[in-house]
Image 1: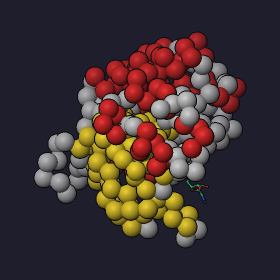
Image 2: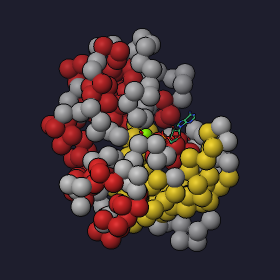
Image 3: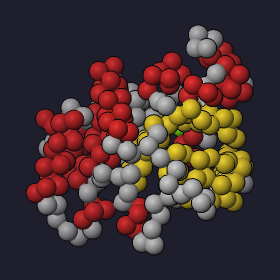
Image 4: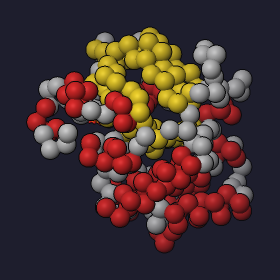
Length: 251
Ligand SMILES: Nc1ncnc2c1ncn2[C@@H]1O[C@H](COP(=O)(O)OP(=O)(O)OP(=O)(O)O)[C@@H](O)[C@H]1O
Ligand SMILES: [Mg+2]
């Protein structure tokens, strides 16, 4: 592992991931510096969600490794330091749980499965629901929310977890402009509090406004670094080489 261990929140080494023997991520080397707000950008099917899942240990890679700087001997305790907001539509909400239940699930890492949430956790859950503008829905069944509302609840759930590193897979998908602004403020607040936030993002127009670090990916890593250094036309062309038309109005 890197000697300069404090610099990086996550280091991905020679990572190859395949579905049904077909590689969808190829020899990925990636270092995510601590305290950055990083966008993961690339076309549909580029492997962005797969990368997030592989970093979270939800997929077994063909080869390679993922290191988290804070990795302690107690891996279970460490896993609670990672927050994950999955891509919307990838979660089956067809189970009975209220909005508040779902947010409190974010505390279970801290609580252990069998313990009841404490008053402080309830208060934190309510505070985060308020932050994402969903407090008035606290007792509503999660299945009875719109996609954008569910997305906001998931965000609140990640926030109560008080993690060190957050992975969010398209948190802006399907949310209105006002919610997008609120989420951006939340992301910036997380960064100001020293958190590392990795966000899969599709809107090339807003990358420079929202993020300070970017990874361009399409099967391989095309570039990764500060937005003002690597987010330029040449790299974008390489990333979107088969979908160049999308880029016309962006760069
Ligand atoms: N469970 C799976 N089984 C087989 N192939 C899969 C599976 N999940 C994803 N793939 C394939 O792997 C590739 C990468 O998928 P992935 O979901 O990581 O892309 P993505 O960059 O997140 O795309 P999007 O922008 O559409 O969310 C795609 O070609 C996809 O069809
Ligand atoms: Mg995806």
